[in-house]
Amino acid sequence: MTIKPLADRVVVKAVEMEETTKSGLILPGSAKEKPEVAEVVAVGPGGLVDGNEVVMNVKVGDRVITSKYSGTQIKCDGVEYNIVRLADILAIVE
Image (cartoon, rainbow, N blue to C red; front, side, top):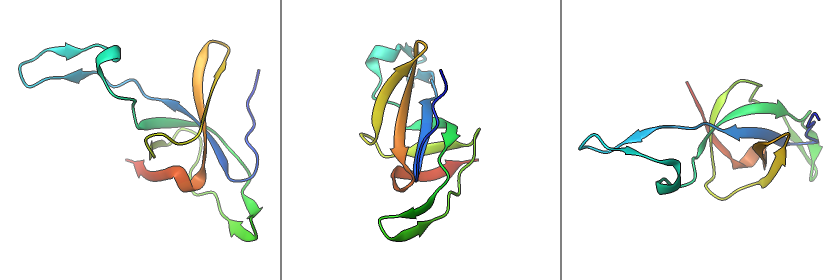
């Protein structure tokens, strides 16, 4: 199944980041907070949203930082995705 976002929506997939404490212990996924860095999987067309022209300035493959509890979480083909608005993307990670 393919997810195609509408308007100013962006589909992102969380990037699993392995975290190590100062003492060298690797934290498992259950001990970490929700990741805020994600990879863009699909981008909506933008256009006129709520009376304002929205230009999509992210592209597929970009790594972005999203607001902590934003968007709608979905599961597709066993993979978890988050659908967020462009306004919920805070930065592009280079």
